[in-house]
Length: 372
Image 1 (spheres, one colour):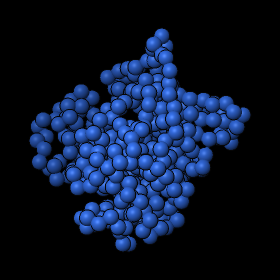
Image 2: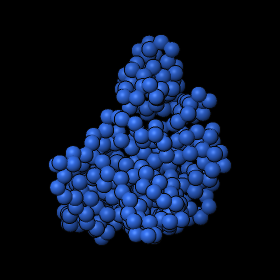
Image 3: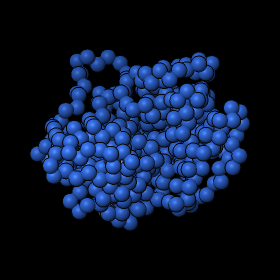
């Protein structure tokens, strides 16, 4: 994005966990002040001679915190996968920064705490996910008190229309073949189980302060309409564009301005029809987990997120069947020690517990609930 909007944007810091070579390539192009490799053991072995002069190499979460809290940083983009993204967002909000959040797990784990922290420090959260960006844009058409409901759209993933029996035989390769988007492995599996929609329900509940019973999901395989907002007078506003993440990323980076950029445009002369259908909650039970967690709050989000991350890892490693991803998430969620108002430390502890329970559930080879 900086290549297109270099007169408006400057990279002050960049980070990656272990893929340091692409990071170094980006550093040579953007010339940031720092880069951070969050895998501390790897960072120690990297030959810093490969870096352009003037770029400082940082390591671990401490490096991320140093970058995001620096006074020269105006906007922090958090696209870290999973629970690991919480620390950077937390530090940035404490420093009063604007955070463009593509890491939905931050709000899934600690939505109330994160939103309270943002209010306390007069910081801002801007959504980068295409669905939440669409809602954010559509909400500009009315006041919060006028919103009747929000509707998250989803492609349905590679297994839309499949039966439970068919899902029982799903392979890793099949689950990674998304029909619309090209994404990382974890989020692609989440799309296949519809867990991504479950996490988006939870994120939307806290980000937009909307109760779970006023959030709905509808499948839209073309992925052109990215979400809807329905107002009390019956008006429905939606945001439409081709499936291209460069648009929501740019909007977050340049908000509140809209500038010409690299995102693809709709070809109005080629449009024919768009399709919508209701999701199959019985075949894809992850959605009900999302609604339950959004209603209950407390420690539920951290447990569901951690259990899902661990279960997806096990599936990708061949240790868990596709249909068992949501089963183990349900089991761990049902047997955790619920707290309605957890501290940040308690959320980190329950995150660790949930991952351990998935490991125990998988290793036991028994389809039984974990013991708390």
